[in-house]
Structure formats: structure tokens, C-alpha cells
Length: 362
Image (cartoon, rainbow, N blue to C red; front, side, top):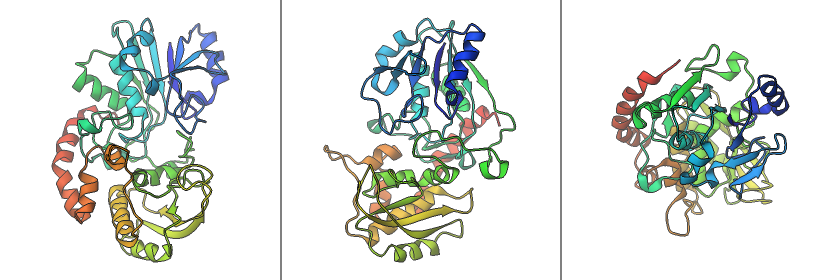
């Protein structure tokens, strides 16, 4: 067996896995590493394609460092691949890319079964939102053929990809969680949030991430390196943040609100600098994160001359790789309203949502 997990799945009990697998004569061939490592402790990608895991004393292949042409040899001769991790339901959240690459790389679908221990995710209520990715923006944080918000669980995504792109060649088993539903609310259900990656430690950070992740395409800190990632955001140049908060709160519809905050990241953008900023509190867990972040970036751009889209040395923009096309950035730069942009997206969203309905398990 090959195991793909982290502390948001069965990976939070590595000793128990070893004990139970040994008791049932299950041999783990090796591990596949997700972005933040098997224990979920790594802030950045591993620089090596393969390391040795300290708990299992087994090779752990870091898939984002492994060439796609090398994957079949790694997966060959495996009876089962067990995939168990909490996802965010977004194309830019890299666990979905890992799932796709594993499915593409399985060389012998007759002898190898892919088993997905499924989880609901915080974005399911949104259904499919956004656009299909432009091929020139394919990257590890944008590879799966879905809209930005995929509208599916990982298990459903596996079924969708298997049927629509692989002619159902993968032997796929999806094990569903008890009492799962598309409108799942961790707070109301009383189910603890298990951190899927270091910067999503709480339900609040996960709910905020649905929109604030796109702030990583502009020159502000999203609170990485603080005690409240994706709750705080700001920059040293964001003077008089209380005025920005007042403007944004007038347009929030009561779904969320902003408060001023000061913070000093210990890593990431503006490391060891005092940042003026805002704290986002989402009141309505069914809010529109795309509207929130669109209006937020518009306000930052119009209020601060220091605002910039983050760019790479070749002149391309980080936001285009995050979103998957140039349209989000260009809509803001051309001063389109959110309603205009939402209307532009609507036809692609309607077509996609009709296609994915048949893969719903919940």
C-alpha cells in the first residue's frame, strides 16, 4: 500500500497506523508527501524529491518535486493507494493537484485500487464558481480541471476526473464520512476542525481563506507568520486602516466585518515589520467570498498608491496563476463592478455545475 495523508486524516496517529496495519498484515510500500509534509509541519515545499519519514522509516516522495514521467514507476506494483486528507474545495489548494497526478500516474489500473477516505469541505455550499484554468497558467496550485471553487469533495472530484478525463480506467473506492452534507458547518455540528495545513489552524481561518487566498496575489501580508493567518491582513503602508474598515463595512451586507489590527509577521511578506491592517470576521458562514475579496482589492487599489499586483521576473502575475486566468485582475484594473464580473462568469459556472451534479455523493 501507498499512503497519502497528513494530520487532517489518519496521519495524525502515525503510531496507530503502524500498529493497525501490522496487525492486519498491511505493508506500506512508501508514502506520498503533500505540500506541508506527512506531519503537516512544513511551511514550504521540500527541496528534495524524496526523503525518509522519521516515524515510518520509509521513503516519502514529494510529488511536487517528482516528474510526472517518474510517477508510474513509483506507483507500480501497489495493491492500493490510500488517500485521506481534509481539502478546502478549491483548485488552488494543492491537495487536488496531488490527487490528479496520482490518478494520471497509476500505471496498472487492474491491480491498483485508489481508495479515497472522503471529507466534506468549507466551500461546498458555493457550488462551482470561477473559470476553467487557462493552460498557460497551469501550475502546482492550479492543475485540476475544475472551476476555482470546484463544488466537489475530493472523493467526488476523483469520480469526476475518472469519468470525464480517464474513461473510468481507475479502480476507485470512495469511503464517505457519516452524516455528511453539502451545507456542513463545523461550528453548528460541533465537529472539531483538524488543521489541514499550518496556516489554516481554525475554522475562522479556513472560512476566511475562501476569499483572502486571492490577497496572496497582491503586496500585502495575509497574516502568515502570525497567530492569525487568513484572519489578519495588512502592510506597513496601510495607513489609517480604520477608514478602509469603515468603507468595507458599509458594503458587507452584514455578512462579515473588519476591525483594525497591528501585527508583526515572524516569516513571510514583511517579516519582522509592523503591519497596519484589518481583521476579518465572517458572521454568515454562507457568505460570498469572491465578492468579499473582489471589493477588498478594489478598495486597496483605490485607497493606496503603494498597492501592487505581485509579479514574477518574467512579467507574469501571481494572481493569474492563483485564479487561473487574467480575467480577475483585468476586471479590477478596468474598474468593472463585482456584479459585472459575476455576470461574465455565470455561463461557465452554469455549464460546469450541470456537468458535476451526477457526481454528488451528498
